[in-house]
Image (cartoon, rainbow, N blue to C red; front, top):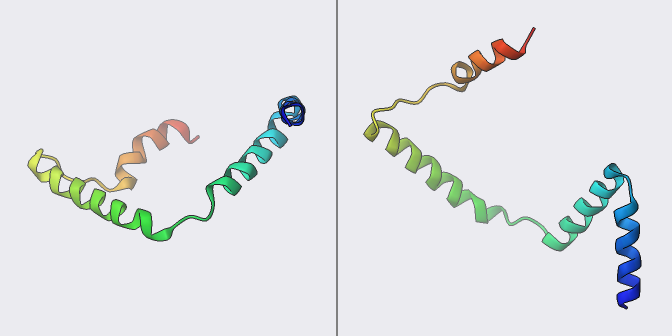
Length: 78
């Protein structure tokens, strides 16, 4: 068995980056299993609430994303 695994590993390592990436993503997704939609929702909601509560206490106010990214966009876009 170790010989077979070593042979597969050698073949994977010899692949070009694109097919190697595709293969590894497929294998990881297979190991990971389907996503549980209920796991992340409470965390995202709690994080947003926590951040919105912290801003006023820190003397900050939220800024729209368009305004936040306007300066970097102006530097990058022709």
